Length: 464
Ligand code: TRP
Image (cartoon, rainbow, N blue to C red; front, side, top):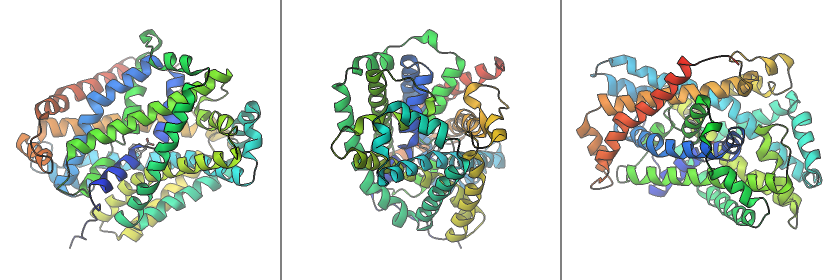
């Protein structure tokens, strides 16, 4: 009846795929510009605190649910919730996750498309030239490229085709193979760039911007955005890690894998910040549009290397691959829902869902200047929610994911048997020394932190 579930080839396979899901544009594109908009220090520290107290325990909870119930998020919550108070209602957590996956992928793929534009510019030999004049590069990107809806749609659709292709070929054939080779290469380049950054004149200012906390600079939205970013960057709150956990071998350790993934993800985000802020402060750059920092800072430095044009192109190629291992996990959640619950074949599920998201995402591609109407809608009325793209990003990262994560924490902390959680975390690990701490975090700390932030925003909500 049920189709056999795919499996990772082993321990490294799971880690690479899950880290591949976590590490992506969230670390390289979004985290640096959010830190920039929220004035650094306090935001970064709140972010790190969120990873420790909320991210790590919830990631363990997601993976253990996936491995225990061997299902998509919807199926997992249907099975797990069946004999609990609330019963079938818990399946709603799974549905919220599938919806979040759909929405996030529809705009994430647009940004991933930007990397394709840079690869093409490098191939045509034009990126080096633009990068030699930082103002020209910014102007090209912000006023030319972003406003061109046709061009952005084409790149977005190309990226969706790549994603759909990878998911189409299944767990081992597509997803794992990509992650296995390219992630280590990306890490190496980032390490080299961090070392370079320490030699630049802007490095000291970058460090104090990033790590000197001024908590007065942050309001309740800053807290919401820091916690939302933790969920976004760790791929939590919508069942992506749950789904990957369902393909995980019982001989592997959930606690150990989780710590490794979270540690790596946080380090990469911080590394990206150190690199980009060192450049910004070294050149005293005036940032026209903060969400383009990834695309306007690095080329100006890479171009100074021998073969700068090609080095630039290579760098964006690696970012494209980091994005691909993330888009794969987003589409995997949406398609595995169709595979497990609607009993569709993998082919039908990936092609249908991939196309639907691609078509919907075209609206996002036009909402950064291409279409007047789509670029100016702003139902939430904040500067960071401008346009369809901004609104969806804000809703998904700051509401869908934290609410999903809150419900997952409540479920595992309060409705799931302690003994079952203990058995699952022990299997493949041996004695889990921090079990008591984990249970305390998942029952009390995570729900209270996320809940308090959500409530403070709702109660104090004002359109400004
Ligand atoms: N974590 C990825 C990034 O940082 C994005 C991502 C992939 C994601 N899968 C997800 C975000 C699931 C939330 C939920 O780029």
